[in-house]
Amino acid sequence: MKPNTKSRRRARAPMWSGVNAHPRPAAQPGSAVAAPVDATWWETPSSPIDARPDEALRDQAFGTERRRDEGPRDETGQDGERQDDARREPGALHSLTRAEQNRQLWAYETRVKGAFAQIAPTLRAIAARQHAPDFERSAQESARAALGFALPDDALADAWVDRLDMRALFAHATFETFRAMSTDYFTADPLETQPQAQDFHDFLLRCGFHAMNVTPCADGRLAHTISYVLRLPMGTVQRRSSAGALFDVEEALQRWEAVELRRFREGLPNLADAPTRYLKVAAYHYSSRDPDHQGCAAHGSDTRAAASAGLAQLRAFRLAVENTHCCGASIATLLIGIDTDTDRLRIHLPNDAGEPDLDRLIDAGGLYRTTVQLDPESARARIREAIAQPRDGGPAPQPGLQDLMARLIENNLSQIDYVRTYAGEHYPDAGHQERFIGVGTDFEEVHLRNLTYFAFMRTLEEGAHNLDVGIEIFRRLNVAHGLPIPIVLRFHYRGQVPGARERAVQRCARVAEAILKRYPDLAERGLIQTYWTLRDTSRAGPIDCVGSSLPSTWREA
Image (cartoon, rainbow, N blue to C red; front, side, top):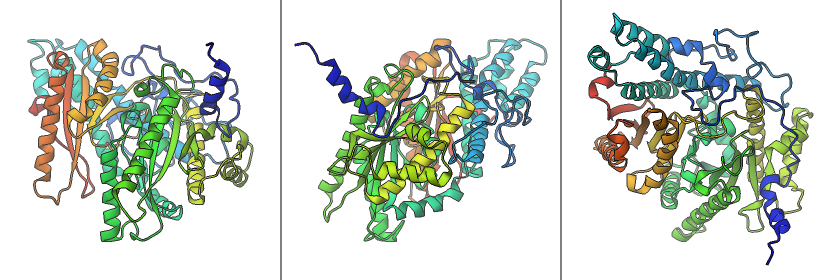
């Protein structure tokens, strides 16, 4: 029988158009720096960020604070006339766009990615003069000036006898840059999360939710989901990344139980009998530029499959709560999608049963276009109307969820303008450009797109598939060019629990050893390097480095 292609296209169309979406206008030429398809972040600038690293960061990695009112800088470190089109102040923004927040986020992104972008050219310059007189002194001066830290003395001392181990130095520089970024996040609050936390906490309670947990895909292009795409304060909102947004249902159930037990025992964040619910969000992703190749790898770049899988996990989690606990225990669920080329958000509306409907959604891009000429209050009213009165006549979300959806859409309008202002109509790097792999528990300090590929696991056996995907990505990004794959391990512990830190150190060692055994072809050539970190979740403070595959003396450099 001849397939009915017309009806099949009609069935899939809502996944791309949305209930309130409008035809996308023809793309205008962007001003971003385009990179060849096979270029890597360290080889060819993949974005204006990598092309123009922040000058202050080259002088001192994360120690120089900038005034809060400063905007983005050009390559000379000065504001103003020498900015290119991608960094110039926009002529027109949406009335709901928070331009000052965008400038602050851009300054942070420039600072962090600029630091990583300096690693390869700095080491390349050092390698070129390793047999020159006074090499050790000049190499250290170059490293301190460009990277903000010194290189291990013993790695440079024998350079006149044998070649420098550039693979190990590259991994060391990556780990030190990560540590500087992490310390800055936990000690200086560069994203100003703390001032936002209480306000959003109170808002969430008014919406009828006492906790919000988001699972984006582990893809590095979604690492900025919380702080950039959704503009929510990390901490108040919990994140648990997982490949394909396929979170562990049993682990999610344990997290829910911990939250509910705290409500019962401590009355935090509210009393156990308060009429609020736990909200679980799954975030899948797709590519508007190249949907057949740059979508979610875990689902074969099939957007509907990615959304369906996220919905299935949400349904399984809800049933796990309801079947395991009595007295009407349940949760609320929300399914969202993110275009990794533009950061445009789509939020799925509920069906008659109250769970997310794959074919009913609100598209932030469409609402941007229909409200861009309106004043702020009129734009907010139009957004709320689109959510409360869907154009297809189907059911609307419950009132509290409507308020949250409206907040997320409004926040995302700022991110849409962020991408347009600093990258053009879309990001120039459609594919993977991550700098390192993060293994273990969540990395609270990572909030930048294409910085980290996450592989959540407690043991390698349970997270092997996620890590295999990341290793394949880095075989193309790094190994193909002779560079190692930097892997940062992270495990949490509670300092008040006797022996917890020691057990966390042992877990780091076991997982690191298992990684090297799983990829012997890379380990034997020094093409995998690991860096072990812990964080005490019972108190505020930076991470603690407890081990590495590199020589122990290098960590003390």
